[in-house]
Figure 1 (cartoon, protein in one colour):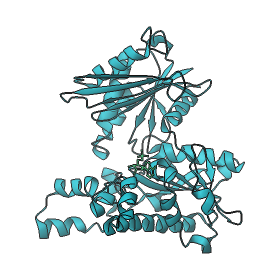
Figure 2: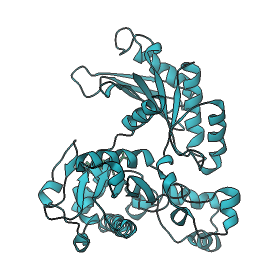
Figure 3: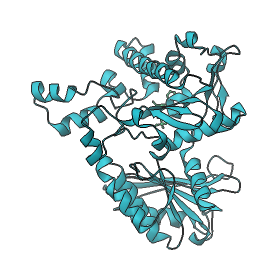
Length: 401
Ligand code: AMP
């Protein structure tokens, strides 16, 4: 079975074609700057193998349809392609950011499902319309091929009301569904599943804290395999300190800025999402740049690292209290997988709760899962690379089976 995975953004499409017999990636690609004067497509056939062929195309790509057609031409190219024709694609899996309360699991896309995803647009105005563009294009390009929506929010639909409700007037929930939804669910679920395998236990017997630290950051408390709390909320802004997003702030900051600085809602929203987080604190949002700046004595870069890792530690402690017993803490995504300093600082002082890391193991670079806890740590600590495309392809396959 061959599954095409599509992650459609407002001006980009990421795609991968996977052979699900072996879970090998046949093609991975990125269409960028859709709708701009100069668009770009990078297509890698057999990525990461000695058969890798990279093709770059630069030309105007006015819309998602054109971008996806170009990608399909390359995938089926008689010389550089990996399949003969698009009929070899058995299913398409789509990343959809927000599934509201409607979607608890990956779902085969029908006209009714598209309408339900459209109904969640007010909850994710930046993401869901772009995801829907990808779905419409794929439905047109692959008529009759099953299409599956895999929601970032679905894994978190098991969170109980006491953890998903905000203490706001109840009517806001009843009428507008204002509540915590959580995001990065595909990643949290994937690394939780991989961790259970490494622990040699069924997932439904595992209590885990999964820590996704990339440009976006979130943490999930997983009890007996199910998400019971997560740090991102109604939108992907709450919780941890992210690349450009603030994470938790006093909600009264809106009123303060409006009254004292005359700022409007859009301006405040942009500030909290695009100009805050690590970038807001020190002007840089890439952790590699921040470490380089700290080495040169940049005090604010040091502050940004401290604010982020302190927040991580606070949430880990809170989720240990939520779970009671924790089998493992799992770090994943760009920072979580690569940054031993962030991992060390985020776990600092948690020895009293049974968390001890092995400094040497933590310092290793690994593409594979890596155990970084000390032999006498009661809680295991793992670094497990996330793979959202593979997770979407697996979910797509399992729904269709
Ligand atoms: P992601 O969103 O998972 O792709 O993660 C992207 C972020 O990971 C970047 O903005 C960097 O801050 C961080 N990152 C990537 N590689 C490294 C590395 N080798 N060391 C530290 N941070 C890294």
